[in-house]
Length: 113
Image (tube, rainbow, N blue to C red; front, side, top):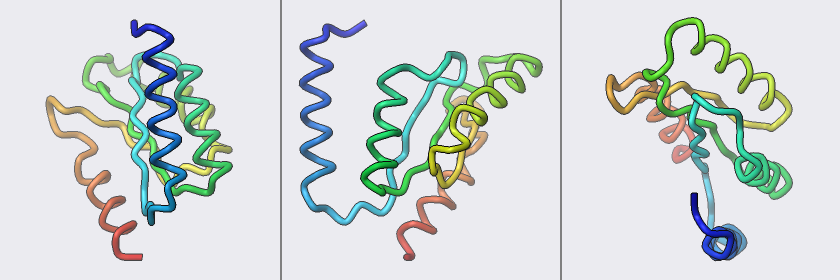
């Protein structure tokens, strides 16, 4: 629910950041697990894939779904991302901490290399 002009400004900022020659070890792409992947999410993942930027996908708000919906949405996101080159797809909850250790492990592994 952000104006298109603001979205374009964010896109320009991100593109500038990612193309600045920084030694990017890992990008964490956040996607709300309760919804289908947005066009902006898909565009960002395509950009990272084409740019060979290592990334993981963190599916946020997993605690907001019941067991059946959670399994369905996890499967849906996993299928949509299977060709993306994501190093990991992690369900995450800020409420109960689920996925925190996996995210930390992915970051530590990226920093070590």
